[in-house]
Image (cartoon, rainbow, N blue to C red; front, top):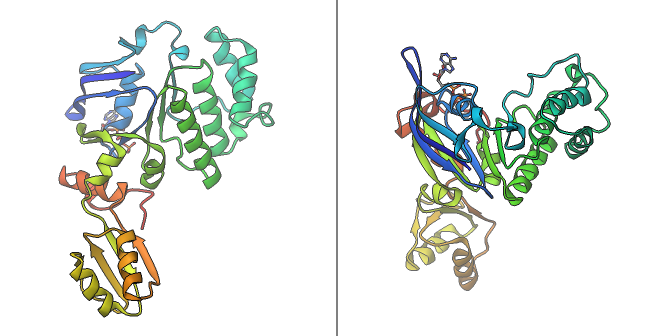
Length: 309
Ligand SMILES: Nc1ncnc2c1ncn2[C@@H]1O[C@H](COP(=O)(O)OP(=O)(O)OP(=O)(O)O)[C@@H](O)[C@H]1O
């Protein structure tokens, strides 16, 4: 469990984190989202005792990270996967970490296998691809079998197979009852991975709720229907109480009725459907709207990487 209370960090005139309070609970993947410069990394660094708060507190299982005995057994973190000693092999990197934390060598072999690096363990980490470095960083996070895991942008730069691997890993770690906090800019990926969301903007809390609840803020869904008989279907849907946007050739945008009901009405009227697509709001839609409302010009400009078109 991570408990952040009134957490504040100022760098000179810049307030990076501004009175932030939230809890991260076990058994869930919690997504930590915010536009560039929102204060995510600064918050994670304070949770991990790498930066001292200007005010407030960040506790792991009720205590500041810096006071935890054998911290690798309590918290595992991946902050910057490229920050490894390039001249050492993956195995030696992990062995050094294990030794300084009183962890046996057998565990090194175990985590190397778990992240799929068993075959590359003897190679210089400096020669690893970004994906392999991410895996090595994750192996280090898992080394002490911690109950709390923190990952900052774990899928950055990974290929689709690597992204999928991380998604399944995060889900498994949460299913094992661990506390999993993960930051990412990849909204479509987060939508598949996180159960709960903490969204910040300009260092302040914008949302702390379940994924479904957050996405539902996008309002009523719209169903796109394509049919060669748009005029007749439009009449039938209006009669059934739907709101139907202006006809555009064969395409109708329908709200107020779900896709199954629209299909039933079309069937009853003997009208063929060539497309029936649920176009409800996505996580990205709601995120962009929320962060734009909060006055973050970068989010409003739509310049986030990983944007789904
Ligand atoms: N060491 C530092 N000295 C001065 N300012 C800093 C420092 N670290 C962060 N900041 C500032 O604090 C703010 C928050 O930065 P932070 O890196 O925490 O945001 P972030 O949400 O992680 O952004 P990104 O998504 O771009 O990684 C930014 O305005 C940043 O410039």
